[in-house]
Image 1 (cartoon, rainbow, N blue to C red):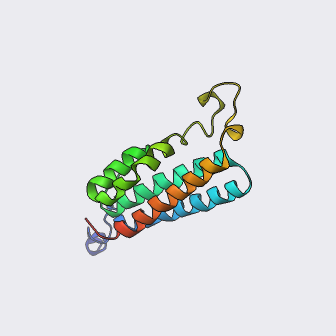
Image 2 (image 1 turned 135 degrees about the horizontal axis):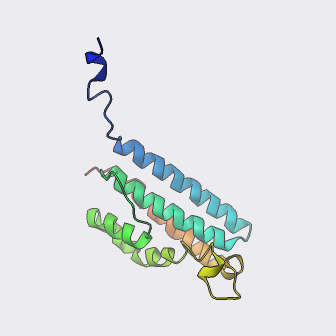
Length: 150
């Protein structure tokens, strides 16, 4: 009675890599919009953080599109190297990836920067714009190159 209902191809636990990639890319785009909103409100530390998150999630989206099942990396520079091993075009963005890594923790935690500084007082509009522009470039690359397949 149940034999035909539980065929492997119908109930496979393997995630659809393109659907997974799309979820990550959409979240990256949302983070980019949030960063733009933060920048417009002069909340530059949050804009930098959201740019870093957009870059990180966009690169992970690319890797998922290329068949990765798990990407437990939180460094934009390391993610970029992984993407660059698959598509060399990513490597042109190495400098912005290095900068992005600086926005992962210090933009949020007071004990991650020297006293008496506070994250929300420590970042500039120029840093936020540079981070958002870099995230936009990385996300565009991830979208364009991710669809090429493995």
